[in-house]
Image 1 (tube, rainbow, N blue to C red):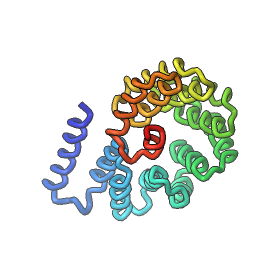
Image 2: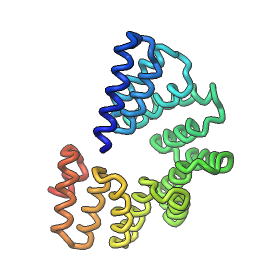
Image 3: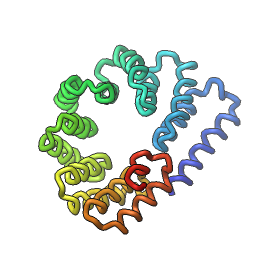
Image 4: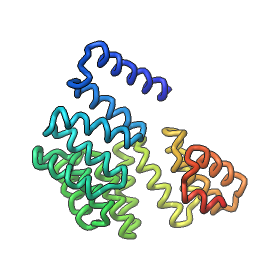
Amino acid sequence: NKKKESFFITFLIFWNISDSSLWLKNWKARFNLYLIRIREKKFTDALKLINEVLIIKKDYQPALRDKALSLLNLKKPEDAMRFILQSIKIVPKDYIALNTLGLIYLQLNRIEEAEKLFLEIIKDFPSYISTYNNLGRCYSLQFKHEEALKYFKITLNKDPNYLDALNNIANYYNEVGSYKKALEYYYKALNIDKDNNELLFNIGCSYAYLKENKKAEKYYKKSFKLDPSNNKLNKNYA
């Protein structure tokens, strides 16, 4: 159970901090807790923790890189850019930082710069899987759908359980009208993450396109339960 595991790890971290009376100095515990919050997609909490790490270790490169990622997830790409450039200045060949820079370019709609950077990362670090998926996203945003599908499938060949690639391939088939094929990939992704709001919403859309309205309603309701503020859901389900 992911929730129990997360609670147990968090408890151990706080117990260790309290027991040692080193909360103000124990940056490693903060950083570990930050990693948990990122996995839980609690990005505001994650940003607070990474800021505390940087108060203690001002130029800690992984923390600068991860602060950029937190800001990016909070839709603050301009702020994220400042910290990712600091991170890359310290470690120029950190492929995770370079990949994050590419994602910032995407959020800023600097698509061609993102594409160029992702291609460079693939050339220099061919085993880093995330970049293939992100390059596929670049091509998708440029309406180069066949190129996008190619890189999503490369991602999946390297890691059959790569959630975003499964979702992106399913999205491709939805866009071209192959709704049953889309559902195959959405369900594969849902087997990996059963409480993924985006997947539940997308499955609802596929069923709506197939005119299977009862099934569509079922998945829209599941998505709405997880995120009542979802504007796309409110629009489709109204």
